Image (cartoon, rainbow, N blue to C red; front, side, top):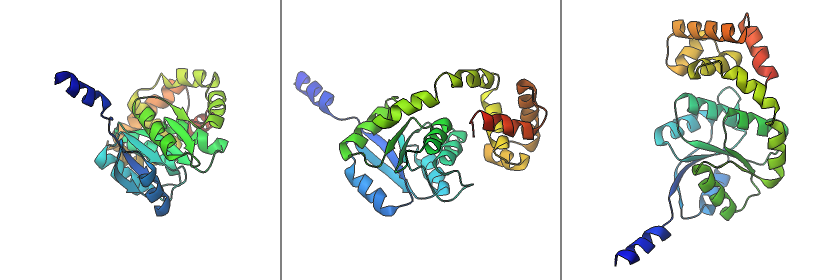
Amino acid sequence: MDSQNEAVDEAAPVIVTVVIVDDHAIFRSGLRAALGASIRVLGEAATVEEAEAVVSSTEPDVVLLDVHLPGGRGGGGAEVIHRCTTRGTRSRFLALSVSDSTEDVVAVIRAGARGYVTKTISGPEITDAVQRISSGDAVFSPRLAGFVLDAFGTASVAVDDELDRLSARELEVMRLIARGYSYKETAKELFISVKTVETHVSAVLRKLQLSSRHELTRWATERKLL
């Protein structure tokens, strides 16, 4: 009897929870229907703000994220990732888009997405991709894999060395300030005081040997960190 129970347990699929973020309701419905039985959808969102709220409240294993979304500051999927990770979410992000342009791929991967697949993917393929992302793998459509390796190859090593000088909080502050957030907006976004933001900005500028937030923006832009 025990051996039979063990066999049943081993055969039982691991349920992975997801949130679907896309501004087209028909696509969200189709994707929900295409996902396998091992995937449980916790919610949906159509805008940057809705995505931030749903992901923060449900904490899914994986967020299926469209690259282009209305709302926010115009940052689309990359902005969703930034907002959610700033709040401390442990969810992993899989970009799902009709676009395979260099700009779109680089933006979301730099923001923290664990993979990028195009919407031509089949139901079984997206189910497998979600499971792999949940387990910690990186997943890319075949034609994008080589490009991603080229874009994030040896050139990223020097950038990583520079970023290693910054603490996790300093890195969060740096990204927001470099994107044009005011000190007050940064404080509100990170739930800290304006005084603390000022302290972190001073530390960032000192560690990176920069003299102003304008130089910081240029530094981050040149390294494609925004």
